Image (cartoon, rainbow over all chains, first blue to last red; front, side, top):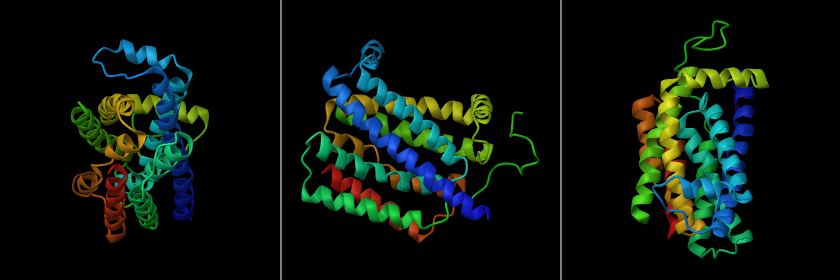
Length: 144
Length: 120
């Protein structure tokens, strides 16, 4: 029973991780394209960039990505999360082609197909192979 | 400059992933998804040294990625950040004790090849 609910939960949270990553990167690319190049050791150009609405939206999405990824890692293996959520790279390339009119070569299409098959192969495995947490004794977790 | 940015995306990113994964696995499966439960989780994560070391490492990786995106094409910048997949999977097996069967190895290798093809 727990196996089924864990797989269902993994699918839902993985989709959130992938969607926030793709949209976050897309929004950052659009925003930074309008702000201009940001390469500096000073935090000021980054703070200025954050005031741009697309950049702010992108940063909010990346924050949501970080949180949802941490939640997923609380039960799913890193060796599962990495390849499965990397489907976002294939989607990012498609978003670049569709909305930013970046050219996608036949070699890049092959890459998109390889990523899709690889993601599918890993998604066939059970997401949790190691449990490091102490057994649940009814507490809400360590530190409580 | 682009090589330095790629290194700053990949090395702290790998370290951050391993620390975050270990920290969250030690915390245990998050089961309470209510706003109150998530607030309590945030309080627990602030006291989790692995997460507190992992997030700054991810932040360095993120800011380097932001600079990389503003310097290079999206279809180059994003795939470059995934170049450490095979190393991270090996480290997850050896350091975190994960069971990596042939499905996972084959899938991870295909993803790494796909990422390389995307960035060419």
